[in-house]
Amino acid sequence: MNNKVLVTGGAGYIGSHVVRHLGEAGYDVIVYDNCSTGCIDNILYGELVVGDLADTELLYNVLSGHQFSAVLHFAASLIVPESVARPLDYYSNNTRNTLNLLECCNLTGVNKIIFSSTAAVYGEPEKIPVTESTPTQPINPYGRSKLMSEWLIQDYAAASDLKYVILRYFNVAGAEPSGRIGQISPNATHLIKVACDAALKNRSEMLIFGTDFPTPDGTAIRDYIHVEDLASAHLDALRYLEKGNQSEIFNCAYGKGYSVREVVERVKAIAETDFPVIEAKRRLGDPACVMAESDKIRKLLNWQPKYNQLDTIIATALAWEMHKEAKNNNLTNRVFG
Image (cartoon, rainbow, N blue to C red; front, side):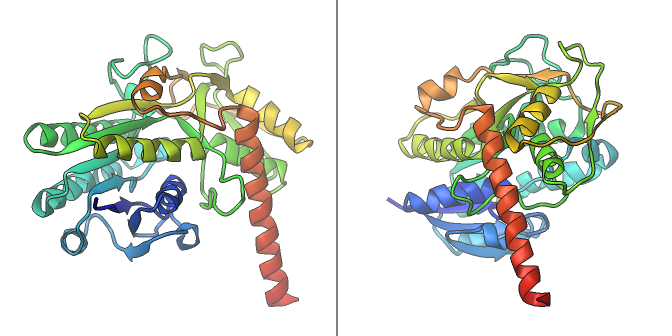
């Protein structure tokens, strides 16, 4: 069986963890990434092609130059407030580039795709937890750009032999427990990453955006998932498609929600420190509460998460940030010492 796969955005936070899982499972991996936000050092397996999905000539040449059995598509912009301020960039990078990828797959005969989608497609759901059949009503350009990408994939699949798995991620955090890879981007806005930075005094304070949500403590509630469990779900999805199964959409989460305040307090407790927390206005496009029902992925993919505790997520994220800080300090000492 051909086990060569293309991973777009494989130098990024989630993509690089999936590349590691693929490599360890024996897949031959080609990473296609423009490295605008990803890190080459995070790619532990395979070959890197530096390129943008907007460059359809290069993308076609890569796809036609190999016999790929599947594509795993991560490359995207993903900051909600930024999508509100710069919507055209998000429709270009997320939706149009997904179209570019599908067109090149069509021309080169690649007929399996695993797509990195988001809980943002649900918007402000009326019922919690959300299932895969919950109406999709995104409230920001990021969520809409991802939902439009889902539609592109589904419409193309209906007219061809393409099979797909769409994974709707909830809030991803944590790092590989051995400390080899984790969140690299200095501009990351994820709550746990920001709180860890504050705990390590890499920022003087942190902001809580919104304390007037209709939730028990007034702060937004999210369903967090460890990046390692998310990565294993992609491997499960790939094997599911390799067995000839039908296309599916899955929520990827644990089904347990935590408020922003709860997360911040757990970071303080695990790091055994305190830091200033400043209350700020809500950010545009942020829903009050999003939690998932994950029975479907557990049943059909036999997905078995291993890191499904908030404290575990935080502890691995904190350990990664400490490791990264120590590595940077050692490098500085070598250069200037």
